Length: 311
Image (tube, rainbow, N blue to C red; front, side):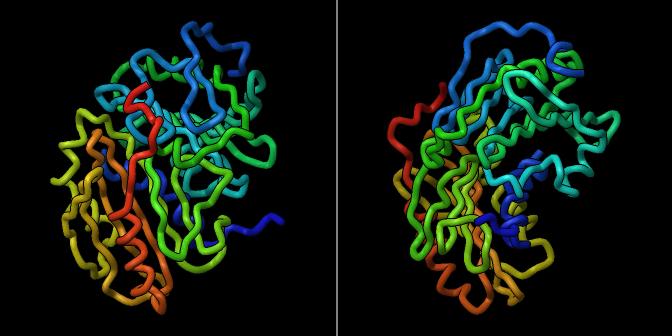
């Protein structure tokens, strides 16, 4: 039975791109694209990637060495589609282009010149088999022709929605006490009490940041204080405190001001150079117990065997 997304679930899904924003016609009209197809590990997605992009150290995403361009892939339930989300449509103001080809869907476009901000972007949304694939491409370089060519590469995507391994796709795993991994999706690892999306109660989300390994040192640990401060805003919080395990170094902070919900946030760097952000949320009445579970989950993060550092 399909459930209506709750306010906490929608907030958690939108958080997929918040940290990035802080830290930084039709198929027949497209140009011919040549090159080898790349399978995105842990997903049923294949693409002919734009020149210079390779699979990132963590996450179902492609990125270049400079960090100017990245493409990220998210599979979720249809109620979380971005092409109908009012917040995202403020960033992508133009009406979507209807795509019919290897995949059928909606393609949104934004540019700095027309829409403001510091990045140009594409969002491809495809609904298939009761799931939605969201492909987001962001570009901060200066070549208008290269940005436009990304569209042609997005149109080479194929997707088998029956192939989904969220832990392999992200490249890490953990087991929060009292929470279950939401299966049937990829992009971020999402944990809830029931193991299904939505609903009330505590939630934990782990996602990879679109930062190349060569630039991770510019974000961690120096970015801990400003990033955690930005997450909590004017609300009181504890931290950041810096911790380490055999696979990760991380900093963490959490709410100390009671409200309907309280949050936990961590920024982690793997020994392979990937950056992750972790966001936990729980009702105030149970936050103390859930905080222990959130912190334990981050302390217990492990790299997934078989996930190559760079494809």
